[in-house]
Image (cartoon, rainbow, N blue to C red):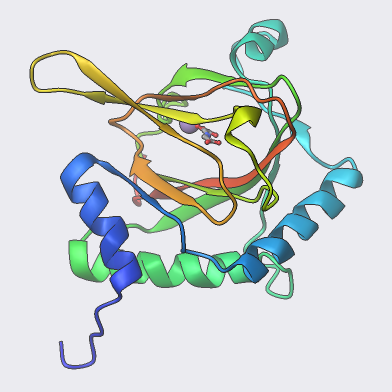
Length: 210
Ligand code: OGA
Ligand code: MN
């Protein structure tokens, strides 16, 4: 382990995961990096290539609209010249660190941009409902403007089962640069209705199987 260097930022994420199954860090990406990613997202959103989100293929679209109202664009990690390389370089480094320190066995990943237009929400859910138990960690990185105000809503509510059978709920506001990581198979969560357009990158770190 002589060439191993402790990374305080990654350790902070891991500590949260170990202690409470989720973690929130505010300094994972710099303001400059967030600005570049936000611009790239907005440029692509203008091109009209985002798709209405779905929740599987057996549910009709009306029901889907009652569950989630965001628009998404899956990211192509092989496009190495893209501004999204900023995101993937760091995430890949973090994944290596996770596998090395926590033996997580992360082998794959998938990420998309997400835009929640005014009024959109995503009802309470678990991230593993698409017949896919390979999702281990959910990651959300918010790309909103610096002047994002809690009054705009759109908070991520994470439900935490307590040992006494009750549950606790924590509200995470979508502040720019904030990274939220949580256990995909364990924690139900929802996105509260938003009063302003809400921007993020969301994705999953997955193990090899299904
Ligand atoms: C999701 C999700 C949370 C957020 O896309 O599955 O729960 O805060 N997103 O955007
Ligand atoms: Mn989710």
